[in-house]
Amino acid sequence: MIELRTPAEIDAMRPAGAFVASALVALREASVVGVDLLKLDSLAAGMIKKAKATSCYVDYHPSFGAMPFGKVLCTSVNDAALHGLPHSYRLKDGDLLSLDFAVSIDGWVADSAISFIVGESETSAADQKLIDTTEAALAAAIVAAQPGGRMGDVSAAIGAVCHAAGFGINTDFGGHGVGRTMHGDPHVPNDGRPGRGVPLRPGLVFAIEPWLMQTTDRIFTDPDGWTLRSLDGSRAAHSEHTIAITEDGPLVLTAR
Ligand code: MG
Picture 1 (cartoon, rainbow, N blue to C red):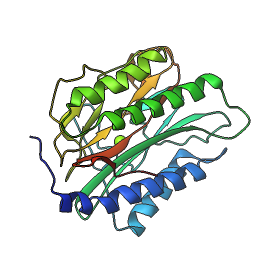
Picture 2: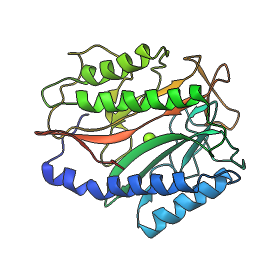
Picture 3: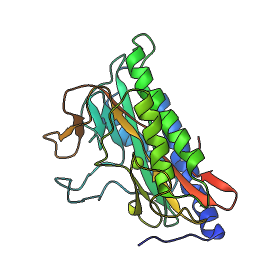
């Protein structure tokens, strides 16, 4: 069921969005060479506690997860695309790291993700293009998320940017409605046709999350039961914001 939020409810979602945004900035700064993924998760847990927020991940147990997630931060390194379960791994120079983070504050959820290259000396042009393309796709999707439009406009904007850059798109996982819980209706496919799908009415709040892999559009689940990896071992990137459709256009609740 799609629920529309009042302007007052959208205002009430701002603290969660601002917290997720600031936490991702701090976690990115903490993601230096030699830092363990479990340390990043514990840093995130400390931020959640200090902010009196509630993790959306720790008890999350959908049909595609082998067990409750058990951590508060998704840490997807290199060929890991989505749902990276933090484990004991020390970041190396040139690693491509994606952090996905969702919490609720005062009962309202915000969900956002960033990808970046760890360290400074081993920046790969191919990795940077992958990251830049997911960010450009997210930016184009936000521009397309106008009241009076349709969800297909958002999906088509993502697809156009990714296809133009030469990437295949896996549409098994995409964006989703955001509200009292992390995943609600409507689904936000990462490719589609303009003018189709759910009407973009003021009050609709959803996450947009393009993700790409360098040379495949196929994934498999790691033996850890959660982490989704590219089938051919090529690297992946992921960008996500939670937005609200307002009378004045899209409002990015997780803007950094
Ligand atoms: Mg997310």
